[in-house]
Image (tube, rainbow, N blue to C red; front, side):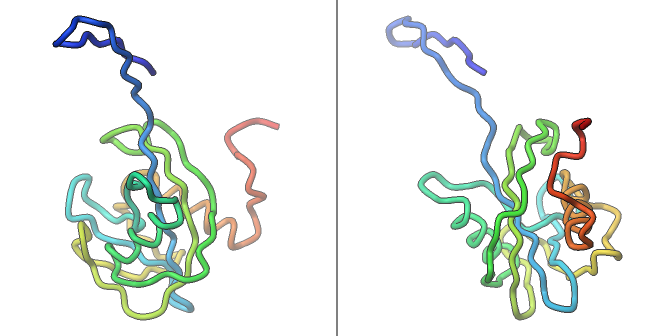
Length: 158
């Protein structure tokens, strides 16, 4: 989307582009225990995957590793891209596009940055108050793990 603005100094018309914000989310598996979720300190409150916005000059993979370390205090291993989510309504604060990664980690997660706390949940025992579209992401991941998902967009008729 493009907005037309007027320069306050010279009066020239200037184009301002309003684009979606790139973000990453990470499904962090702790072997034999489940996935790590963070209880958000800031609105919207609830449980979420560790993740956040990509910094300028940072790759998606660097952002995923940084966000996991900042929010759950663990270094992730075997980072691999899972899927992208782009519904303009996925984040009530702004239009974001999130690239979701899958990773493994060892150790005990601890809440950091904007995470009030962390907890490990088996995929069949997830909390009810999951924010953003993270319940959808986790459901897609569960189907993927069970071999029920081909990776195709299920919302488009064949």
